Amino acid sequence: MTSLARFSRLDRREKSQFLVACVVLAAVVCSLAAGAAARPSSSRSALHAGRHGILYRENWENGRLDTTQWGAQCNNLTEPNFATRGSYTVQQTTVGQGRWAARFDLPADATKPTACEVIHDRTLDLGRDDYYALALRFPKNWREPSGVFWGLVIAQFNYEGITGPPVGLAAHGNYVNLIVGSGFFDGVATRWYTGNGIGRGNLPRLFAIPRPLKREVWHQLVIHVRWSAGMDGEVDVKHRIRGQNRWKQTVRLRGVPTVQWSRTRPALSALGTTDKIGAYRAQSSFPISLVNDGFCRAGSFRAAERCLR
Image 1 (cartoon, rainbow, N blue to C red):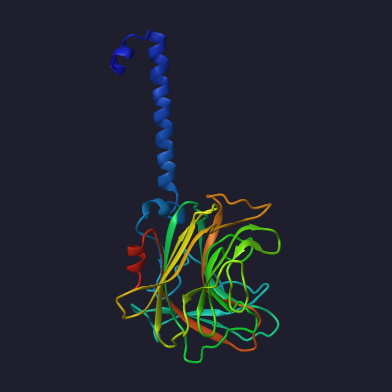
Image 2 (image 1 turned 90 degrees about the horizontal axis):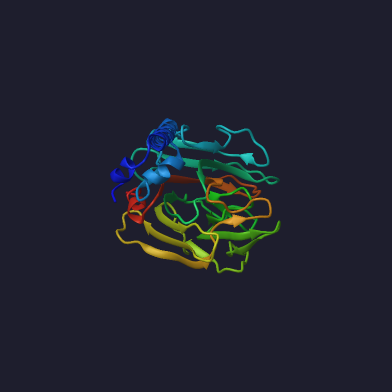
């Protein structure tokens, strides 16, 4: 029997109730649609629109930081707190692509950490595959950034505010580590953590850019992460020098979580987190700098690759 036939057999009172319910349902759907349309563009709405494209980027081609989408924990925009803040300069002297790139400069401070990072809000997004593109150039005088083992953190992906990043990049004098710190955080350490610098972990050291680290060239990276609180997390890194056509896979990690949680902060997909790029190190008696270009977060390798030229 068709729906129309069923409707014709209802009495007048039942027909009236049915029509009222339809009107209410239609009003709810319209209200939700209007609310979604009224919300400003953000990483959350872009998540669905750019499932296989670019979700957001900062390639510096506006000649400045896009502060409608990004914040900065640098002396340009943020008062110092636990760390001595460095600065970023959007400049045209050393550029990886296009007309502009950003130089991150950290001052000397032998007693406190130094840091300058730009940040983009997002959510934890369990079950999602993210692909990050990033280009980096290390100066001729580049050296080990600090006497403390963990080097210079240059990217923190899906930072949750529990401890260090669940997945990130740490630059050293002669290589760049891919770092993972995931699983339950007990107040001292996460359940799984990779080696970093001379520090050992219960996971192997992973090298996003292996030895020897070339200076004064553009290193292009695409980092893939499947965000998971289970044992099906994935991390891959592909690396090349700008001008090369072929990518080299430098990291392949499987079978561990790629997010963190604690007693007070569970791993929930809607949890607010941040992506950070820039420079962050422990105390050091000398200044340091590097140049950053071409960053984006995308939904596929091909989309991320297009952010690097």
